[in-house]
Length: 192
Image (cartoon, rainbow, N blue to C red; front, side, top):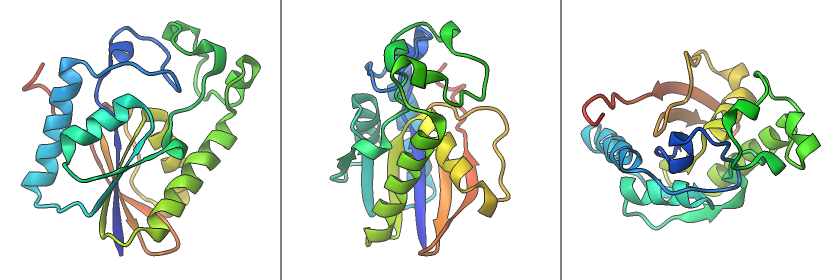
């Protein structure tokens, strides 16, 4: 049995400015760096020894991972956020109501199901070949949510609210399927 810790990156400048951030990128804020330190503490306090690590190719994911662990890691394009096309870096008020579906295809972005398939396939392939027991992957809010949706039929744990920055989704993997065991949304009140 393997355990996957799928984590969202820390707060970024575009998160702070309420900008749509998919394949475009912005740097972690000071709060985002502190959030990553609190996520690191989760692994330390729970005596979880990470065996391997992966990050989206986006700088915000790599920077978050590097604040959480000193492990060498692989950058994986399949872990990237939703491609929002021409709406990248625009204000979030341009987003339609959820669910987004294929809205972004009209702007040169990805449809929801193709995005979900990309993320789910990438994570499955990585975990299948990884020889470690505890695997960390740092990705993005919508990527994490779509992975949850891909495996919701095997999981009893449900998300209440949103996937906050540095939220950790803990999945068990038995060689064939994932099961969501826990959603760890940290208390950041000490750094606000």
